[in-house]
Amino acid sequence: MSATYRWFAACSAWLALLLVPGAAEAGGPFFVRSDGLPVVWSTAAPIAYRTDNGPLSAIIDEANATTRVNSMFAVWDAVPTAAIRYARAGFINAVGAFSGGDVDTAAEFDAVSGDCDAGNQSPVVYDVDATIFIDLGYDQTSVIGFAGPCVANATQFLTGLVVMNGLFQDGAAAPVQDLTVAEFDAALIHEIGHFSGLDHSQINVNCLAGCGSADLDGLPTMFPFLLDASQAQLSPDDIAWISRLYPQSAGGTTFANTHGTISGIVFFSDGESHAQLVNVIARQVGQDRRIAVSVASGFKFRVFHGNPINDPGGTSPGSEAPGDIGLFEIPVPAGNYTISVESIDDQFVDGSSVGGQVRIAMPGTAPPAIGPISVAAGSTMSGNNVTLISTAPRFDQFEGP
Image (cartoon, rainbow, N blue to C red; front, side, top):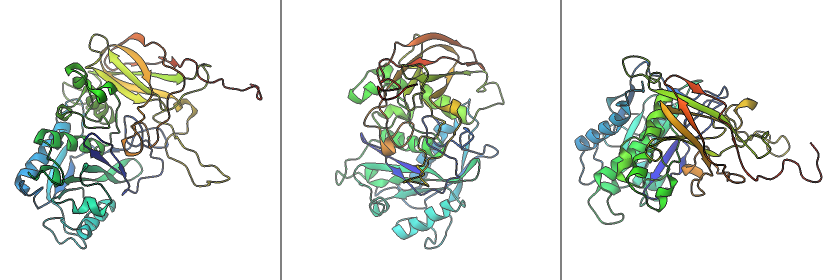
């Protein structure tokens, strides 16, 4: 599964992936298995990716494009508390209709992406004139790129794909105005986050209408929309989650000696029913706009269940453990935090979703933030439950408990 990134617009889902049964999208990790654990890449060796042997655009040749791609992967590679690593393995291997060189036709892309789906290679494709984007039905004037894992076994991703739209870097004013180098690279660093197994994060959502430097510092690279070139720099949320998926356990700076976890359950007003897909944010006291980490409640749980009458096969994968309903677990740098909840923004749907492919508005209203909660490195502070205010009653006048 891949996601696309648009400039001031939505990421759209692009399904080209045969994922193992039991995987589900969620706020934090992109895919969660039926046992509640995330699907991740192996860290036994660096993830090998292969780049296109052709130009990115009319003015950016292969050498410059590949240097930039290597730098994009290096942003995630450089997180000291994460064990995930990447390495360029050379140019994209010839396969089927693609005989090598530049992937510049729809048929060649189909061959290369099919080889990714078969688990054979992880290609990074440069689409000079948006031929591939057009063939796939994308609006080539708004979609900057798309990326994501291609295939997984029972526990791990095996291959992934990144595709870059050269129209945004071709020096021409039409059919689309170029982005700056920093803006374009920020968008693709976001896509490599999806490639690595991360979903979107909603923090400082007020930035959709404009915000100051402190809010921009906390705005995740994995925010659903690209709002500022500064998103090329990973936020505390991005760092915490890539480290949670791939915890560094060796050396002086490890995940366990820098981060802890805050967990709890979001409840409806009755204090018994668990609420799904509420955005939960942990904000560090004194640095609440800059240092914040989030997740959607129930991020491990299977959101959709098949109806045996009219949809016998219609389920979404993920955990079915009752204790995972409404549950949140947020990795945070050691410190003091408050916990607040909010509705996922109504613009974040489909490929721009936070916590799944649909948006469910938060019922009722948010209570005051809870805390402060003191989190030591390596600790889990559990039981930090949140009860929503003025939600609909659990039973109506025709029912009884």
